[in-house]
Length: 284
Image 1 (cartoon, rainbow, N blue to C red):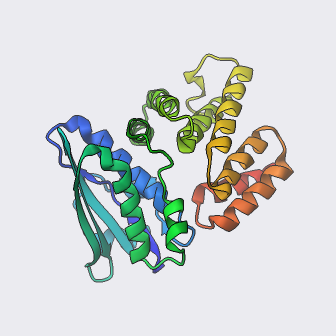
Image 2 (image 1 turned 180 degrees about the vertical axis):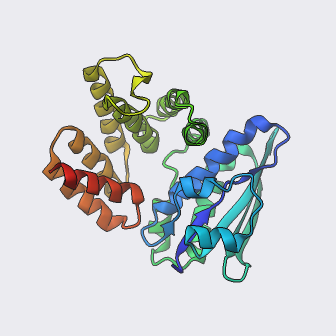
């Protein structure tokens, strides 16, 4: 458990409450980037976001989530300035292992996210070499506009779980589509698009009624987004999950199982991947 962490929702300190999406989206992507680091155990988004807006003792939160460290922070965004503060806390004694304030221009948001993830991974003494670590936590785009659209999509997806308003999924898709249009090589945006259309394929799945397209049309959109994610992904190990998910929807269960197994070898703490391989095994 020494290399375990929960990322609490960053507090929106902006005067404009409409910036709440930015704080939530940035939190989610920092969480996601840390989760891509193989030797870190990261608490799920659902677990971490239950503490949003709550002022509870750090040690109590860590104990409840079963982690040794907590990352918390705040975001202030306005005009031509962006301030992000972050601090990594060891739950056992409240000691701050690392903290930093980034006072930058809004265009630096991608570098800030990647920097936070790298510094946290280093502080927790992961076994990865620096260059591999940088590749692992990379946002995957150099377009700030595409990245911000992606963040807003993540925030909307997260709020569906909080509010139960499934209309948010359709709104999130619009932002993921926009991110992919702004940067066709943004693999994570394409992956989120693929996941939306996969969710539309199940007749009994909650939210499957959001689109009135035929199943064949939905499947075509899923495959288009999946192929775009696979082709755009620079990390061949991460692409294994995209390929496995595509194989699963092509009913190639043996291929899907093999790809998921290889993916889990590279990312042993990816809860989404572990869940997928169990589902695949049940289908074979």
